[in-house]
Image (cartoon, rainbow over all chains, first blue to last red; front, side, top):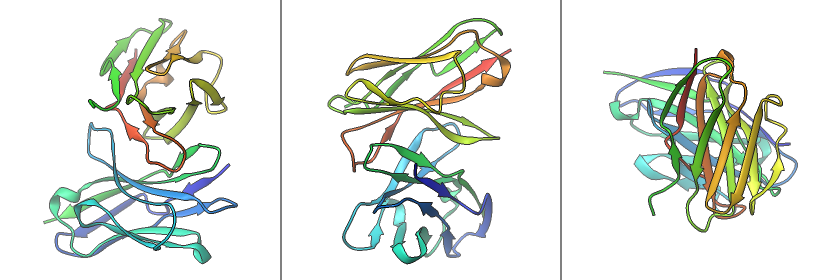
Length: 112
Length: 113
């Protein structure tokens, strides 16, 4: 089965600074890749997704992610973080058998 | 569409009691997932259904857990008997088909005392 690794459990950035959250996946074929965000007490909301085509995908709230097959990575980026971006971020990988697996999550704290 | 609807939002029960969590997926979606979220283990896939048929239940912790999907618009996750270590937030998610994103419900926070 496919798997996802998010190496950073917790990241703190200052408001206005740039952000990069790491995600590495393991899957034998071309995966479907997703980033979700979870605010406290809420369900998961989709930020962006990659299925095929352009390896740089744009999402909501100013986020983008780049699929790098050679590195098995799908890192999430944002050029300038806002205080409202503080949340937990999950990378997920989907496979042809319809399964969908999530990473452990990265908790983002934004300093004023 | 109202999205994925889970009930109840919160459940507090005593150890040994039966607990049933419910989920209504988005109309027209063919796949349904049950996840469990804890601080220690993160977001775990328990089971998923495709066209109402369980495809993979290898994530179900033990025989105390069971899930059903009697029709395309309803699924249940049952724990019998419940134990304190089952305390977690349980999420249901659905998606239209392969290669589309999953939509999550608000979750059920289960506390077993």
